[in-house]
Length: 136
Image (cartoon, rainbow, N blue to C red):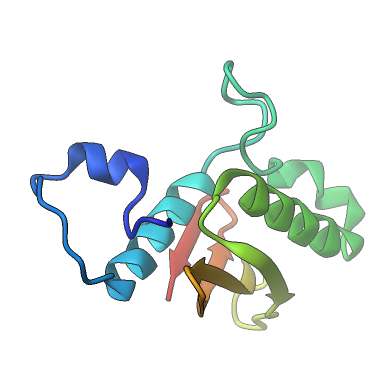
């Protein structure tokens, strides 16, 4: 059974009780919080897991515009590998003429809770400084 909160959130929670009611809002924000943290880790920066993280954007600069598709695939594979609560990740690049140095992506995932399927959509902005901002 899927939990509304990540393991880290459950360990750090002040609440020790359980509820029979599944809270989809808590699940939504827990996943967004997890993705915000995940997408701000660069591949190779963790000694314990060299595959954890997304590639550094500077690796792709010389490959534009093909770099956008490579980055989308990297993000998709990373999310599917390291966030077990989500499945079926679809990523679309959303060009922003006003901010050409930022990459904006629309991400849609599916979360399966028992026999129920919930769609989770959010926007990810990769800034010129390398920071990822995730918002719903």
